[in-house]
Length: 246
Image 1 (cartoon, rainbow, N blue to C red):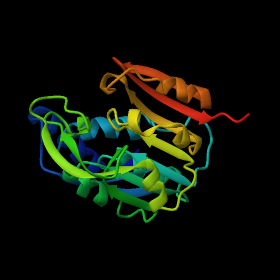
Image 2 (spheres, rainbow, N blue to C red):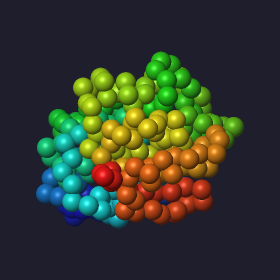
Image 3 (cartoon, one colour):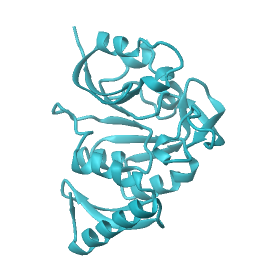
């Protein structure tokens, strides 16, 4: 992860200030990764830096296998850091970045603007098409979800799409790599047809938010080879898996 000394200094000060105060004004820094220089705007929430560290420093979304995806779907794109990470690693891939929270969607658009192969969609991914309720977290925007976690969460009405409808919109029949961090919605979208249409999975299963006993992990293991499985948080599982071919 590269940056000029000036940007590194300002970024360090900005992170400390944001952590101390809990929030700061949005600010843009010029950064680089994998030989690509790009501007990144942080929304001012401290959780932005946790995501930044996870993606660009720890490289937690770096696939365990050498793959060359042509179609990538990023579900729960947040401010766009994962989409940018993938665009730098796979410059010939078409990326669809989906984010439900309209209050950070503009940051996602800004951060991905210099990557013409990234298409941004402001919608909640779920099991129905139309308007639906989405809860913006009162604590940190990365915890916003289709499920209410706290009484102080803000109720928003947003556009809802299914993964099937999204694939149809972009004329996609097969997703080479699907990244997901959608705070429990994965329980509703991963059916047998969808799992058959994906080559590589990378994301987080939020068992603590599932509304009933789920067999999702078993369904994934029946069709994919798990390359990575890490219970980093209670009742949550980060996985990477590639399609198993007979």
